[in-house]
Image (cartoon, rainbow, N blue to C red; front, side):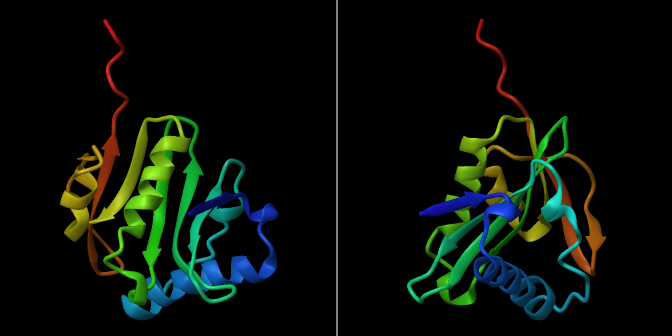
Length: 147
């Protein structure tokens, strides 16, 4: 089950587990030295999504949603290595799309462009490097209005 809350409504232990998972995946596993707690989690309209594991306090997948006014952005999608292959990222992305109004965008690691395309996202710019990893800006436009 996907949990969804603003940072102020998340208890300290759960927030720690979410930030720890993000650091384990993005900083340690992907060997990218950067400050993950960048202040954006505290912005108005920002939400954290997560899926709890079986162990008490365990978070096995997480994502961050930002409201940038003209678009909703999902990012920081991370799944614990032990929980990969279970479709948890798809659950988080599906929840994001179902609970926000578009248009939507994200900064995809380029190896995942086809995966995001299955959710209706389209490349929206050239590939670029971020922390030494190829990324592609993607967006999911609003559906056309009914006739």
